[in-house]
Structures are given as structure tokens and as C-alpha cells.
Length: 406
Picture 1 (tube, rainbow, N blue to C red):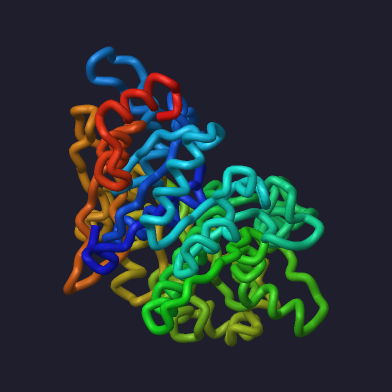
Picture 2: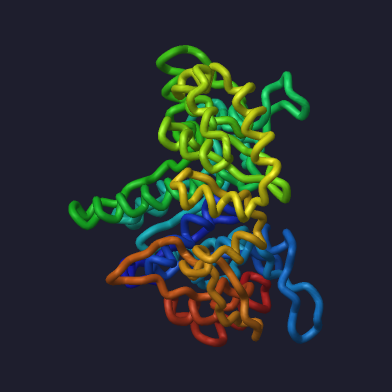
């Protein structure tokens, strides 16, 4: 964690990806994040493999890759908020915190007194961030939300994949849960802005972080282009519609991306491929001409690229300052010298007694760098939190454990 948010306390009532990603970033920035999990079960992602092996038994633990990816640096506190005692514990803890982040269905926390209206009536300076699929209002507000559904509903899937008239054509989702992740990023930005607002005014506020809003905004220029022209963008696969050549080519031993869109880059590409006269062909003389004759150009280039090895061609293109790169699988990503130079993998001591390897925070501050801490085991900080934050005695904690509240 960094020291930037040191002293800020977060009550994390989120599960799965969007909310946990948000609170993980806040933990990386130095906030104390109390992640509330259901006793005996925990976050839903604890049951989605692959899993760490329990070093004592050799059996899979409930520390999954999904959980480890989005819960770094948090305090795991197990409380059953569906019980009156558990709900009261969470209300008490909320009043000790600066921010509450939740991703329950709209209105469902009101019965526990953990909704924004109830908590901010008790503590007006509280910042309350609700992460939902469709926002707090509107006809879809009560609906549950899933990344796959939102990728289709909010537009990105319609722009990803090959055109319908090509083999394998059709809409394509991204493998990473992009709608969850972009919502988590926007929620984090919203919370940081609200903290600055409170610092200036003393006022808390509510943040309505909707996956629909974040994903529609994430369409960026494709959305604005439609609003300007009333023409929906079409799927073009790995082809860049505004530059040519800018697509995927097959080498003798793998695929590479070549993005030589301007005239100088195209001339250098032709020289590297041993076909300098190609750049003088009237069909290929300018980017607009190359786009108009994309298929002919692609066939001509592919015939030349197919004869080269991937590594050799990438080196030659780099020397000629032609933009190009590999399509790496995860093993190649982490073997890449630049990835290794950036030290994007960190090894952290886990409370299970083993070391876990995770991707580090991409936040890079010169004065307050992130100090990484492993994601917690289920309920690892329950007793400590109840004692230190709420002042419960050992006997009270033992009673809560015996009744299944904690």
C-alpha cells in the first residue's frame, strides 16, 4: 500500500470483481479496507478456480486466482449481515469509516439499515458508493448484472469480432471482464473525487457507479462517431479501419501485428520485406489508397511476411522504426524483457504459509510507492477488527462466533 490514503477507512460490502477492484486500488493507496465476507463461504470468487493448494493438506483452498487478483491488501472480516447482530455490527463499523462501497441489488441493504439514506442520516460526512449494473434509477435498476450481458447490451460486443460475411464472423466478447473492470476504475475515481470534495467542504455524498454508464462511456470515439453520423460502427476484426497496413499477419512461426499506417512507415516496411517498389505502386501510395485497396495490399504483404520468422522480422522492423509487436500468450507476457524490467510480478507472503505470485499495482508514484500485501485468508482479520474498531471483548467475540454471526 501507499501512504496517500493512510488514515482513510473503507467498509467494503462488495463481491466478485467490479467493487473489489475498486477497493483493492484504494487499499493499494494506503486506505484500510474492511472486506466483509459471509462466514464459512466468503466472496463468491473464492469458489471459482484455479485455487491455491492448502500447504497442510495438499487440497485446494478457497484462495482462488479470481479472489487473489482483486483483493490485495484488504482485511477480511466475516460477518453475517442477514442477522440482526451482524447488521448492527456493520452499522457500527460503517460509522467508524470514511467510505462505504457496496454492490448489492438496488434497495436490498435498506432492510439491514446499511443503505445510503440510513447510514448518512447517522453520519452525513460519509461517502457512500453503490456499484450496480444499471444504476439506482430507471427501468433496469432492479435487474442483476453480469459482465457478459453488459458487454452485449452496452455496445462493445457489437464492435468486436469478424464481420458476419467472414468465416467465424459474429460479435465477440473480451476474455477479461472489461465492464466490471472499467466500472471499478470509475468507482475509484469517483471516491477519490468525493474525498477531495469532503476535504474542502466537510460534506459526504452518494456515488452511483453503474456498469452501463461506465461501459457506454468506454465505447469512446465509437459512441461519439455514431452520435455524429447515426451510423453504427461495424466489426472489422483485427483490421484498423482508419489505417493500412494495420492488422495481424502470419509469420512462418507465429502471428505479429504490423501497424505501418503512415507513408514513411510503409516505405520502411516494404524495404524490410525486400519489396521497395511496392510503396511506389499507385494503389498503395497514400494511406487512403491503401485503405481502398486493403485486400490486395494484405495479400501482397502476407506472401512476404509468411517467409520470415517472427523474432527475426520483429527485430528488423524495430530497427527500421516500423511499429510492430507480437501476440503473446500469458507465458510470453511474463517472459518478455520489458515486463520483467517493470517488475510486474510480485511475490507476497500469504497467511496460509506459502508465497503467492500476483500482478503488482500499475500505480507508480515516485514519492509514495505502493507496498503490496497479499490478499487475506477468509476471516483473517475478524477478531482483530471487532476488538480494535468496535471495542468488543474476547467473550463477546466468542459469543458471536458460537452463534454463527462471525
